[in-house]
Length: 207
Ligand SMILES: N[C@@H](CCC(=O)N[C@@H](CS)C(=O)NCC(=O)O)C(=O)O
Image 1 (tube, protein in one colour):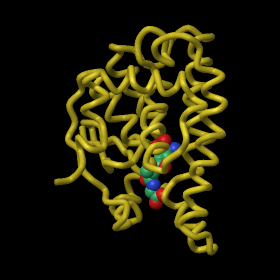
Image 2 (cartoon, rainbow, N blue to C red):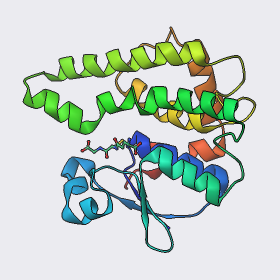
Image 3 (spheres, protein in one colour):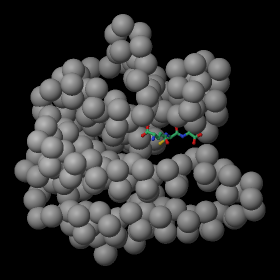
């Protein structure tokens, strides 16, 4: 399998963690976002949205959207399970993941930042925008976090795979985190695990 990836892409970081947790080896290929390789005809043929990640399965078919990739990995490589089977637990886990996937991360994507720049928003304004929407998402997720060591309960689950990369982004943009003690603790519990550490952007950055 081939993972079309970018070291700093938080959506790709989710998939890297899942692959590591499941012990699935892939070939990583960097799509250099700052060089606009995601808009190349070659990449658009893989993913018409012009995003990473894209996972090319061994039979050559390509899966896009990180949550769809995680769901596919769960079906193909069931252990450890990331998305619970029980309907109530499944809905709760996906709701937490989607706070980040649907309502936080898309607001600070590269294309959104570029659009804000084109509209005359300076770097300070763009960074403020990013911090604002992360804080909004984290405020809700903190209230949804519960008391378990991980968002997934006693073991990492799908929502943890969305939290950790978003926390990395939050720190990159100096987002104040004092209001989110549960999320900070869960992030620390996750990042202490080898599967998360090996997926960190610094661990996979091009040399
Ligand atoms: N909902 C998509 C989001 C993917 C996404 O936003 N990828 C970013 C990197 S984290 C990207 O490729 N951005 C390129 C751009 O904005 O031009 C997913 O979860 O896979």
